[in-house]
Length: 158
Image 1 (spheres, rainbow, N blue to C red):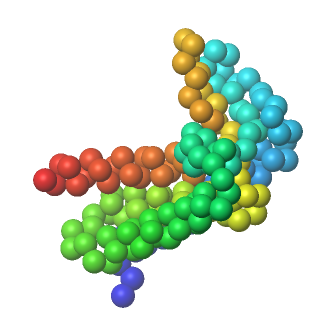
Image 2 (cartoon, helix red, strand yellow):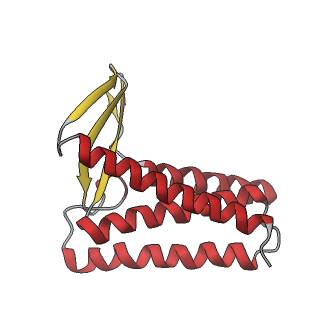
Image 3 (cartoon, rainbow, N blue to C red):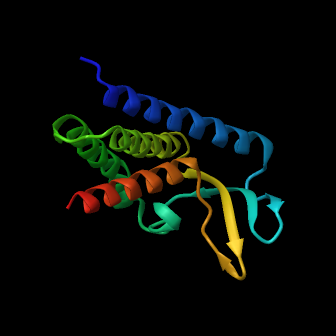
């Protein structure tokens, strides 16, 4: 039986994957690698960089043998956890389903990059008053917001 939570999950999942693919394709097509376009001076640039590690370039210089295994196994563990929550947790709200779909969509978006390029395409570059956040992408945003919502939800639930 298809429920409201499965529809919400599916729409969030598909939406994130499609938007992630389209935004990365636009960056690859319109901006040469290692170039940038200033959007909001002193605050936001579009860049075209590649990340061989995980979030914020962690493990980017690690040996390929174990790093590649971790970068492929971790998303599979995340998928198992997400599907367990979606189908086994008794109190999945529409908001939780949306967050779970966003996290899974983001994980798949970055996994597709790793399978295609052996690295992830990043393009959102924020900086302010000397502070520079590492470049990221839409998939990263979906994962971060989704996990943040879930942590808040479970913390609030007690």
